[in-house]
Length: 512
Image 1 (tube, rainbow, N blue to C red):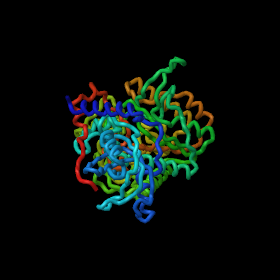
Image 2 (image 1 turned 45 degrees about the horizontal axis):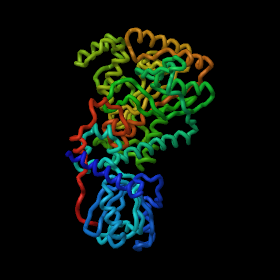
Image 3 (image 1 turned 30 degrees about the vertical axis):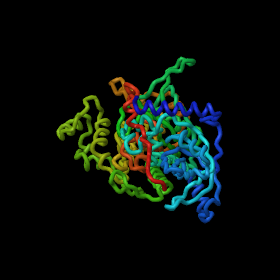
Image 4 (image 1 turned 60 degrees about the vertical axis):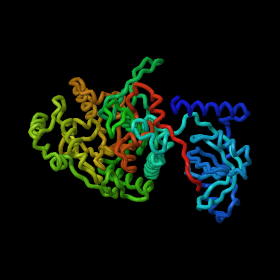
């Protein structure tokens, strides 16, 4: 019989034996008084006096080492690890044998006793009594051999978190990062709000949406691709500073920096422009680094990066000339730019507009080279339908993107608040859609109505939480920083052999 199947059979037998003895293997309550860290701290606070601190702890069994009439066991809880010291003379024969026979790696245990140090100096719990809290039917993965496959780690994130403390730390960092951004904005008078996830007309970005259907209303709806148009309606309604942190959904490709659903912060500030948003963005990220990392420097993929303001600022024209060798001012038409790209051996999408071609150049040549924090500003009008035109050039808009570590981290505009100009932009986008651009922005008449009541001049900023977390935790893939990333469906479940590879062999060795 296969190893995995045999282990599961034995564990199920133990569940049955426990119940036959009137013991619930999954009791509804726990009497824990201390976490592992609190228990250790209480022992130290008492001067390390043996048996002076009584505690009840709880956690998952991660190691057991039997040495005759003494057993050492490790438990893990959310605060760390604690060694249990179980002795035949303390527990008596019946209870000592019960522990050895009924408990396995992966089980959750409640242990009661007093704190002590072993002969080797490790702070431990001298167990006086114990209780099963949850019997694990499946064995945990092997600490050394299991869970190496990246896809398995993502699909079975609970195992990844169980076995890898550094992965748990990623998501603690992510949570701390979001808290820091909230604190920064709250302290500056921004109001956190919530806007619809299901929208009758999607908008605020160039992306294909996910489509759903409301049965009762008999209405096709879209998962939002951005918060923008609803947040800017609030500026019309006399909120001057608003923000939202939440999920957006874009029906696009998957890559190391793209996931179909992702977390974003968007904020809008009345009486501000894109230069104000540059200052806001660099100050926000530096503040978050102070709060989360305790410093403004970090290492990302081997690069030492300094987040301290002010960041480098470079016009898009100069950036493309520096990194792609093309002066877009010398190529004012789509045809001219395409010829210049082809002359340099750059693949050209025959359906792309001039703005789309420029966007491709940014992605291929500019973005990968911007390791230190950099704002690239002044973008083509046709790929920025919600941004205000530059006063000196109607074909350019006041927009910037912020790059760190070779990734786009944020995107911002001086927001368009002229309803007549906005209507023309929507109509242009409609023509682009008819010509085959699936990411062109649809016309939103309700949003135009809101603008016609008067919208104050304002700046808007979108910040990618997932990518910023990648940066703060030195992770190359966005899947590393999303708890449950989207994956292609498996053609089958793990078979018995694969489960067996994940299975932990019994751990043996000397006591501590």
